[in-house]
Amino acid sequence: MKNYVTFFNIGAYIGETTQAMVELFEELKIDYRTFEFEPILKYADMIKEKFKDNKDVTVIPVALSSKRGRYPLYKCPRDDGSSLHSTKWNVNPDDYEMVNCDIFSEWYNKNVEYKNDNEIYIIKSSINGGEFEFFLDLINSGLNKTIDIYCGKIYGNLNKLTHLDDKYVNDFKKFLVKNNIIEIDLTCYSMHNMSIVKERLLKLMEEN
Image 1 (cartoon, rainbow, N blue to C red):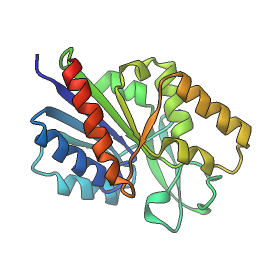
Image 2: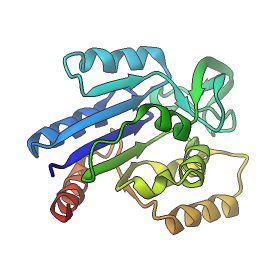
Image 3: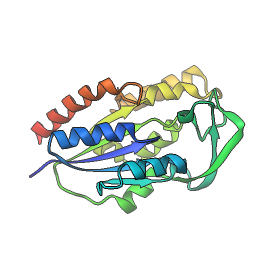
């Protein structure tokens, strides 16, 4: 049975990571689909335009959280540093835009169709402190057991919320490791680590 990759880009920004993933999947001649979660509409529209001729790339203009509805996304001077948390160290709590939010496990159960037994799941997460809610939902729903590769800036982003002390953050990191959530550092600033993703993906394909 042929391998198939499903890639979830949580905090897609303008789609640099998706571009690299699509190029990798096509290089390996593997069928794929990607879901791009980007709540800021101007960035979501940029991804749509970039991949307008690729039916395998789907853009979802929502932020992922522990609740559904519309909530403030707080801005910071750097374009890719916005957060649902007003306590992120460099956001302006008075400067925000309202965005649509959803819960990943609920969205997944409604929208992701099973492909085959050889499907490989990849998550890239870089959501500036939203990792606490996202990964709690992933683990509590059991979906973490279906994910084969984690990448992004998961551990680094956990340190960005000023209302959490070091012990809480370190305990949460241990909780993630206990649940086999071990990241490959991969953002638009560390794309050289795509070689590690490729190596891991090739190994999974061989095992299948």
